[in-house]
Image 1 (cartoon, helix red, strand yellow):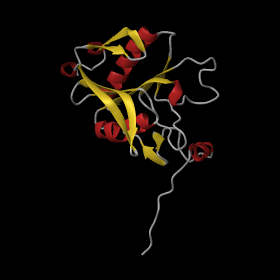
Image 2 (cartoon, helix red, strand yellow):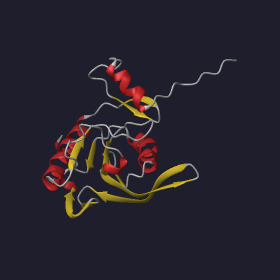
Image 3 (cartoon, helix red, strand yellow):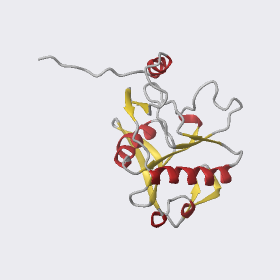
Length: 194
């Protein structure tokens, strides 16, 4: 009996594959725990939520931090997720020298329709293991924001100690800027208008 093992890639190998043209320009992939993962296509509610969220965060955050949409984060040594949005610390080179790493990240945000289970069961422990302090999931199925904070690691398992649910008609404080409130009614798509 032959046992096969999947090849796991490092971030350097993943970048080399991209340089060699292994991926096409429109391929939507990310590196998670050494595996190259095909990202789920965005539906219309996802795209609308992402557009509205980016607009609201841009108005709130302004020049205080950098907003990155669908851009890589480096989680050494084998992950390079591309969250829907991330708020990262400002840097003079705008991350030209390297993508943000966990210590640069103020908030990671995923927008989840069909990807909810993946965002909760794969991305959540990945971000927690990297000690990213705050992780949000805009849950389009339940029309709520799942806010996770206080990452922990225990016996090889990572997660967040605290989970809060915010309804689509509420406001939430940006964890990185306690003086800024995000009105969720301006973010969630109005399904009855679609």
